[in-house]
Amino acid sequence: MVWIRSASRKSVTIRTDRERLHALLLDVVRCGRLMPGVESMEQIGDDLYHYRLAQVSNGAVVFTPDYVARFDTADPDAISWEPQGEHNFKSWGMFRVGAGPVPGELTLEIDTRAEAAVDVAPVVVVLIEPFAKKESDEVTEGFLAAIRDEVENSYVETTR
Image (tube, rainbow, N blue to C red; front, side):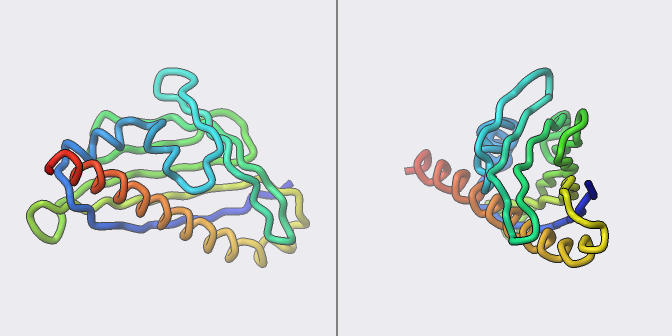
């Protein structure tokens, strides 16, 4: 078993106010289920959440991520998470909320790092990690788009 590592930092501009964006981000389960590939997510303790993701298969690796993360939501402009316990997948990250380019917009950034335990020869890690990075970037971009759409759609519905 070897650990495959990836990291991603992406951001998106969202037409909303802080209160509405914070409401979604602080609802960890509702927000987490917007992430592409999440098959199930549930709160299992104080600030602890169990994720089960869809199977990943790229020809060299077949892997079903299953992990627990602890969220720190004390600062709604900087919500972070880190892995808890021993699992086949580990994720660290942070949502950062900042002022957008114009009034009425905010910037949401996600900065993540992940490790996956896979059963491959150590020599192929260097070949697999670029694909893991690409997958991580795609998931992060999809997650940001889903959060933006969820917040902007709820914003439009309540301002009509």
